[in-house]
Length: 94
Picture 1 (cartoon, rainbow, N blue to C red):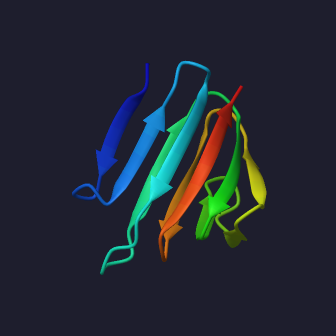
Picture 2: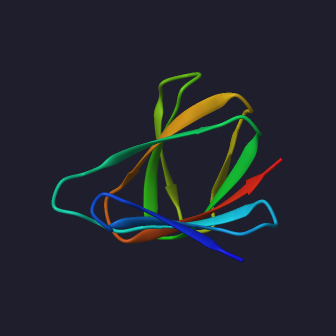
C-alpha cells in the first residue's frame, strides 16, 4: 500500500511505500518553496528528473543536483529542498 502526502497546496507530493523507499515528486510554483525534511534514519536521495537545490543542516552549503545525481543525508539530521522547476527524487532510507 502506498501513502501520499501533499505539500504547498498540492504542488509537492510524496509517495511512500512499505519498502522504506519514498518517491517524492516536486512541482514548480510561482514562489520558490523550501521543504525541510527531517528523518532519524540515514537516507540516499537520487534526483530522477529536473533539478533540486539541497542544503544539508550539518554544513549549511547549498548544492545543486541534476537528474541522475545523488547525495547522502546522515541519520538524525535534516535538509532543505528547493525545486526551481518540475522535478522528482527518490529517497532510500536505512
